[in-house]
Length: 510
Image (cartoon, rainbow, N blue to C red):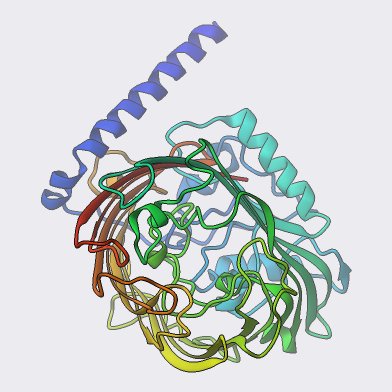
């Protein structure tokens, strides 16, 4: 009898998957004809409920917060409060903040929950202890449950982390040089190990880490890249960015003071973990793949260099951040290589995080002036980073990055750039095709880049690109991203041309 029930459930799961796949193929015309179903504001879950968030950072209502409705869902015992994975680039939900606050009882060594920080810094500086994501096409309960149990157990001794692993298959038309098909395995580990916390003093301390690994899965992939073969300013896949092998991008001490209003990091830093975040476009392992939609190509952000990051959020709707770091080292190099004042970046970010803008809902608005010295040349520039939900209950969001800077110091490739686009949360559910597909997303983006002349054999001063990406929550731990990009006039290609890039990326998040 059990085998018959299992067989029926398996067939039902396959049937639902086929229906959603057909819906995905038919999505574009249906979205033009559909109207969104009515939605209601979700109730705040109880302290015993499993708290899950969608890709916009909203609390998922009803049965999604019931452990029984989440295969492999985390237990929520008193000794290990369940904290959802935070959406970077957005303020922390009040329900999450309250759950963290309720877990505090006094001074702790290796605290099991993050410290209570101001809303924007809270999602920027910490990770939850929940690996599972809702709305999966296939629920693999035994595997998911084992992974979740490990993550919850490690959080009991203060370790909270995200571990991304990706396999990318890419094909491109008309490369300037090299192969037109490349394949990679990449991994990124981002960890926060809470060392101590004293709520009565308003202080907490962490050890902040980032490790990266990359391996080409063919001989060509071990010596070539999409960006190099196309000769473009933008990297069509920002997940693939370093040397072959394993390297450290961040190893730093993190300290909060003044009840969390002030946070200081010092050591080897990846400033992109803090500066230039964006809710809709900031992670190539779950959002857009093109590097212009992950971080600004204009800002001289330092990735694995010695430096300091200062964060201050005195109120609810505003923050200030200053990142200082050496910029002469590349991924895989020792952070002590070529240290000196001839290669330093100073980046300031002023952020405003209103809960509602003109009735559209929450947004974040960032101004990013900078000064940098590269090779003894000092120049300045400015960036603007915006995100805005397009309706309080709307599944649509808009983002934009705009920047201009001196050609000698824009070390990430563009002296001027516009990168903007839209993201649609849960498109199949919005179109009325697949209820429950709450964690899928559909994105469309456009980028224009003017290359920096420093060290480049520039042939085209105006490079354009578009990207369309669908993020499919395949299992509670795995996403599949089909991605299509078109690039016009790659900067260092000998002649003006058009290149089409198609990619499939499988992401496993532990």
